[in-house]
Amino acid sequence: MKTQNTNILNTISQNNLQLLTAEVKETLAINIDVNATKTNLKAIDFWNMQRMQRSRGCSKFPSISVR
Image (cartoon, rainbow, N blue to C red; front, side, top):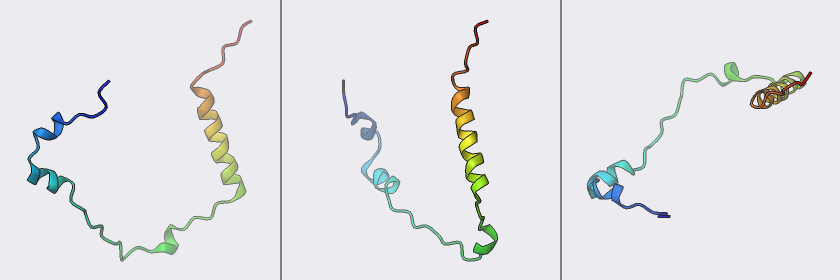
């Protein structure tokens, strides 16, 4: 099996390839209120998260009851 494919890059010119892979500078959110977005998680929140993950995992393969 072929592990590398260079045919895709042949259709892109060198200049366009450099433009696509150029570094993008991120901007900072200066006017954000950090205290307003802070949430305090309690033990019950973690318990509920684990319970939801367990129920989602079981829904993939529902159990078949034989009577």
